[in-house]
Amino acid sequence: MSDREPRVENDEKNEKQAVRSRVPLLAILPVTVISLVIGLPFVVGDHPLRWRPGSVKPVLVLHDTAPDKGRDAPAAPADKGADAAEEVRPVGPVPTVDKPWKPGMPEWGVQIFWDDEKDRSDAYVERQAQVQAAYLVGLKANAVSVSFPFYTEGRTSTKLAAGKGTPTPEHLEKVLRVFREAGLRTTVRPTLDEVALVPPEGWRGNIKPVDKGAWFASYEALLGPYLDAAQRQRAATFVIGTELNSMEGNPGWKALIAAAEKRFKGEVSYDANWDNYVGGHIDVPVSRLGVDAYFPVKVDDDAPVEQLVDGWNTWLDKKAKGPLPRIVLAEAGISAMDGAFHAPGDFYTKRKLNPAVQATWYKAVCQVVRERKMVGVYWWSVSFGSDPKAAPKEGESRLNFAGRPDTEREIRSCFGSDYAGPGADPAP
Image 1 (cartoon, rainbow, N blue to C red):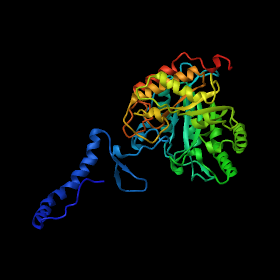
Image 2: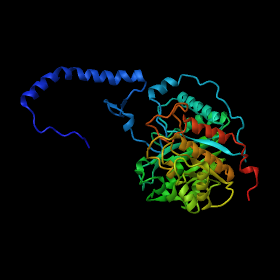
Image 3: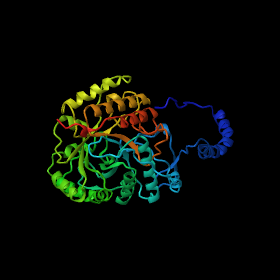
Image 4: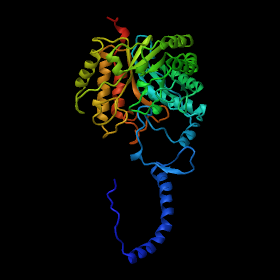
């Protein structure tokens, strides 16, 4: 609400004089405003004009009023014009992983979220993959998971399809090839976009397609070309589903997974949401299970690592005590802000920035992975279109860790640890 009250009376004479006195200003003001809006940003380096699709009118975008896009858009990509200019700039030799992953070793990875645009050139896609590969190698990662969106029309829809942010299979192949040549273990992870589901009330975990058989048939048709691309580029894992709580246990998974395994010879995986993981049996017949792990821990922002580790173990013990050599943390992360320990999976709230919260959480989770002898962890996340060396902007998701020095230090410490992996000791 405005704190300005309308004037209830005016002196006619004064008002006429005021109008006359404003005429020169009104003539000058539009030119001044336009000059400032267009010219000043080029001085300070952040042009605020954006064009809505299908519109000829520019829109002034203020960083403080831009909504947080949530978990499926971890970072705002650079302006398209800047991307086009970057396409012709060579990256140079991409470094390679010092110790490439082998079976039994821990998977030290990052989730790359890729919201593609169809008019991106092959050169841009390849170059951006090289940028991200170099960054991951610098973090001492040996693995990467490529997450990208596909779409539905609503919670009850039976149709699944590629959309505006879904990369083509050809683009996916280029990215997987760059990552593989850098020595990174690769995972392909199509993920159901939630925009049409109207989050947070609607999300991928509570869809109710009216015809589940038709839903699985549509899903199989969608995944086919991406399974082929993953096979051609020798990806290690293909995630057949992510956080589809309401669909777990459906008999349609058996046929879908069998069809996938005919086209793709690596591991076929399913990534469960943390609540379903601890609450019961994940009834999806895959050879590998990942957990999107956002366990809340009710402690203060300055809580020590030990308290966070205890909080995590309390959650994990509800499922099984001791080592968990068949579990990979497919997603782990937290916002760099006050109060995030209480709800690390809250992708929509934005409170005061607090990088220490994020860094401490990463350190604690890595300790849990080692102590519970897990397969590994993939941190959420880095946007494919971003510059990972740039500091996160205020308008971007608090979950971003790229460009946060304290968190990056903990990632390097984790990935460079002497943990030999679940294969070092036989499973009990």
